[in-house]
Image (cartoon, rainbow, N blue to C red; front, side, top):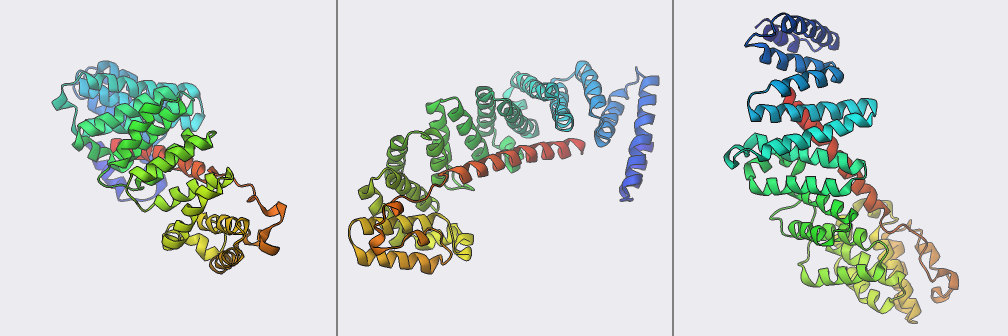
Length: 392
């Protein structure tokens, strides 16, 4: 009761020094009272408060030791699961501060052990907040496994999180801010790609393609899949994307997927296949590119549409259609006046050997970087949300 009163008082004092003084004082008092009253029926509650103080002081080594005691003495299965999840979170935080790989391993194993116990619960006890915690923690454990290069384990863990999310809508809602079905299926797809499990990766892509609502349209995930799976197989990439575009409805990312298919054909000198794609993009989807890459148009340089017009001008020139080649170059310089590609289109009908191939550019570097950043952000957000919820 004295602790609760002191905690209420320190909440009204925003001073960091007051908070630290509070943490240190009550950490010492709880350590003393627990040591003096080990058989008290209230010792379990005191340990919970002490754990929160250790975490607040970032004394994660002490948190780990205390949690091991709490896990061993927990009488209820849900309680043991809760403490194992806490151990996973604390050990992950300790790893981030020490970079000691043993703490990363402890974290993953604690999350996996908690999930194993969770599976032994009856279905009616698996839903709700407890199930939501498992979704988040399985995602975190998968991230740890992926960081160590164990992509198969990561894929298995994130698949468990995905199936749990699909089975218990209430639990999925609890975890949705961090690990909604869209995020889970996307991460799972990429882990399966890493271990060359095509059928499993495609299963995830199907899930992503049939969501009732989404943050990123299906064509976005189709492009992610194709660029990863067919990284060194242009023909496979072209066949997959062409089939996808033929079988799936248009969405707000379809123009970019079409553009990548055109780029692939063009780079393989299949100009007759690239040509109709580029003409369609120019004639019907210029405004889509304005919406999809507004900064590019503001800066007047770069982007997908710049490459579309550049390649199209080259094809017209190759075909000897001087008027259309010139008009396309004019459109390029008008829409994107700072275009570096437009400067390459010089000379009569752009016929110089040096200008026939577009300049070297990494096809998917920006996409890969964005995926890595998103993945890291999601993992960090998962840890933060779990941490704040447990401290409450």
